[in-house]
Amino acid sequence: TAVASVDRPPLAVFIQVNTSGEASKSGVEPGEEVALAQHIEGNCKALKVKGLMTIGMPDYTCRPENMECLKKCRQQVAAALQVPEDSLELSMGMSGDFEAAILMGSTNVRVGSSIFGPRPQKATEAASQ
Image 1: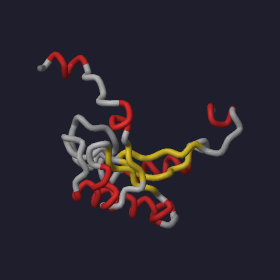
Image 2: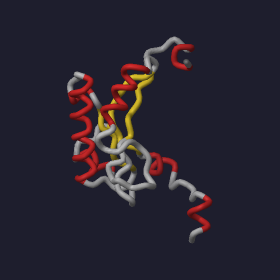
Image 3: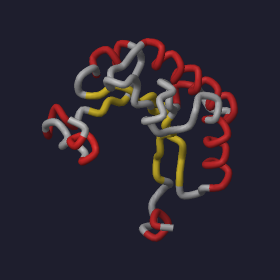
Image 4: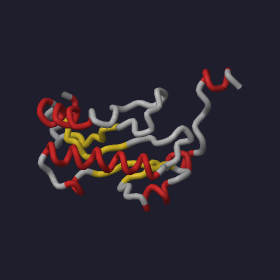
């Protein structure tokens, strides 16, 4: 594998959970995170589950219901992997709502558009306007 070829420890990965239930968002459905975490830990020696992440609501904002769902998923994964719950990080919050996400328990935030500016529109989005 690429990780093994550079002689380094396993690569840390986050499991994305679709807490908003939107078809436009990626990730496993709540309830599927344990099976994925167990698969990674049991079969993917070059990877290590670092935590869980979600994108949130349609407007990409962090809502309490998304965070509560992600926290419950973390509880389930921690129990299944027999690790302390706080050893698994939570990634939720982006440039527009990272303060709220931190207050709700996020340990990682994604703030790229605050640094680099807004993402360019996808061709399909631009065509529909």
